[in-house]
Image (cartoon, rainbow, N blue to C red; front, side, top):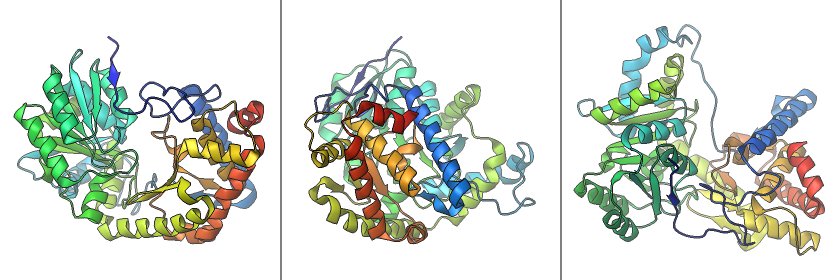
Length: 427
């Protein structure tokens, strides 16, 4: 059964290109599907390899805002073994996860998945049946991984952005079986506590379980806004990713919540090979133990220093919110066209963003979050959660802004040539 997806809000970009299914941007001829996105990533890997071979590992700079690595305390402390590691670390990991997400051992349990999207997918396949409805709610729009999970479950997905719209959808839609609440949206806009509380209460009145897609919000909300932790909000189950904002990796999905619901989701995840390898339980535990909420504030402060310099280059076209600075894909394409003095282009905004990201990597060794997802959850180039030491190693905020500006100039030189863009991205 093919799912229906209904997303409130804009359906085309500024240039009139219709958005691709489950994505908040239009596909173009060059990056027409996820296979092409993978080809683009392979090109990026080759550029990284060449740069390291010629200039060393220190010539590549991780500005994704993500920490997708494994930190080992020592071979004897963290044996990478699927049988030994869970025996040594599972109970401690379970306690640390419940503490991190605001749960308690009497009512809640945990499950560990190979990434955040896997936790979301297992949740949908465990709790949603074909023909049912999933309601999403966030400050802007729900992540594409949720839309794809609903589609794979054979459900209709309806996205909302406020208590009022959510309440209306809850009344109008029949067979609502799951609510997906996102504290911090793909755009990094954050829902206030009273909004989340009202939504959770409405869902409970209708006996609909609430899954909280709290990927980065699980730390940003409590650390920056003094919001409750994930399970303290009253959701039935929630998940976060340890590669995000204050944690040091690895890239896994931690899910916690009501014991019975978690048991269903964990079993479904195991059946579909979505679980994380148990050998990683030691590094996961170390990551949770090392987390300090102050680190989130420090990452945001460094990002703000970069935004100050970017503002000097891009003016009002730089979009800022509480934790990020962004160049939207439509603005990237418009800026490149203006600098080139052209009025038409063979590419779409998403491809312009991809080209800018590739130029930053090729010319300066800057890895942006654009390369962190396939396909990316947003077409924007995001500047977020920048470590101070990475920025210092690169040369500071002004040099970073100059690199972005120079790369946009280079993009303007080829913006009217489809073959040149395709060669840059794929060949």
